[in-house]
Length: 147
Image 1 (tube, rainbow, N blue to C red):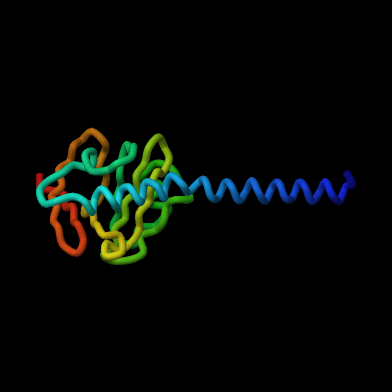
Image 2 (image 1 turned 45 degrees about the vertical axis):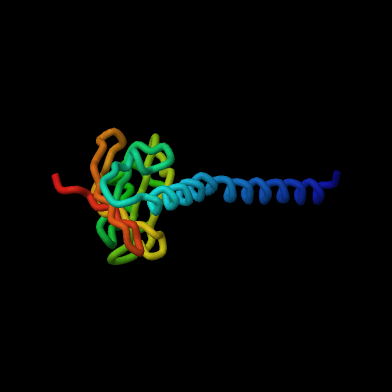
């Protein structure tokens, strides 16, 4: 094989590996986002906990005030991740589900586009069994119950 052929083969292999990494690194997030939407939009009125409602493994879920910077979010969750996005505006649902120092799902969208809204600020940890009130409407809304 000539030097030129070796160079092209190496370049082709590098591009292929990079493309496969990009595709498969987001498969878990897509699957988790689809599962979360199905689970939350199927809830009926009453109360639930995130442990009961969320269909994938997580240790903590964070929600932030509008316009919180990526840096502040990373500081709060304890690590940086390319999955983190700054809250884009008022009324946006932002949920960052974390497990073992990695983001397993980052939601940052308007409830009307998601079909659901989970309303709290701060952190809910798996095992706390924090109660949320479920309200049906054009969007399923989960609101943190008062203590």
